Length: 565
Image (cartoon, rainbow, N blue to C red; front, side, top):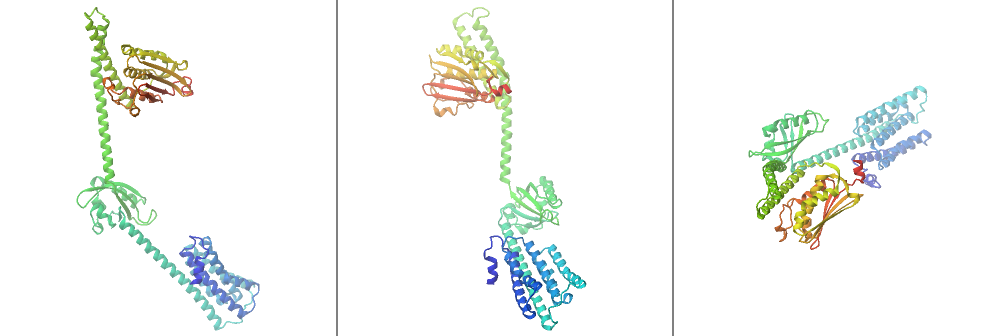
């Protein structure tokens, strides 16, 4: 055994020696040792070897070389085929030197197919049988052509017959031992595999079941109790259709048909009935037992509890439906509000404008003049708020479409300044602007740019103390057009800058609480700049003022992007 252990472990790369290779090394080593002893006895009896006999000597000890080569990463098919060919060739040479077809060594040919059977491959058994048949055919051809040399044995004695049978029996015993060892190892591996899979099945959280072609349960893992409340022995013999929710009966039938009849893996999500009467959602994965090409129609299924996931999905669907209902309700509300409020507001603004301008003669007193102006301003402010809400709703719904065109930014800036001029004059706030020549003509949505400027100017005038200033500037470069509105107001705290720009967000302090507004101005500016592919940036220093920069990257007429568009 120490001799065999040497060949199994010494200088053998990891992963090379397995059970099959160990059996091959053991068998070839013993055959080589026996052949070496036989060669010594043969040549001590016959005499000194000549050329062909020296070749026979090499053939007798060749199995030792094969045992050594088996330590290298050489395919077993090559080693086994070489061993069979050498063995058949050795018998042919020995028979040719000892009488041809009358040689006692021909009895060894019966061992060639047996050794081929050790490989476990039918093709190798066929090749070994062909090698065994080729030996007597070669000897017959040599005999008929006169190429058969004279026998080196002086005569057949009981000793030579006994020796030949003794060697054949030893080799047959070696083959039988190797075959038995191979069978024992295969049986042990099968038992270990079965124990491993049984352990996995018994401790798996998922339910593993085996089914007949009609869905009848043949085996159920212990997870059946935690999943469905049934013990494995209770489920044996039950049909899966009995446990399935009636709405999912067709789904599970198609799954088992695909796995059992069509021989491919199928997944399905169905509800199974628990022993207490409730239902549990499972993800069923079934596949043909033994693989896609195996015979039979049995099915192996793995069932996983997905009740919690289904509850989350149902909650998400309900939340989505609620959100869609709320969105539709909001849209209906805004549409109704637009219709109900715009009509009277237009009338209020129109009549107050007639009174303010005294189109039909004097109103009759200075207080009437003041009241009419207040009506006009309040109506205009309310209309502005409604338009802002409607614009924001359109943007959020993805229905705000830009109408890109080339226009004069200076004209639009003048119009926006006139919109806030009256409020600025009341607080003695200076309004001015500077438009760079390269930014005088831009390519954008005129109405959106007007809305951006009005919102920024309104905020600047609203939050700038008396005798302050608000400045509008614009410049164009390689990165597009930048519009900036700066004021000398009170500024914004740094911790509030991140919140501004979100809908309905405002800075809360004792100064801003007295100012009107909904917090949509900067949100609209940010949204409109994003629609242009740009961005909005806020810069503010407490006590020094605020600057809002709007970047419109595709608005410059010198930009390659706009030219290409």
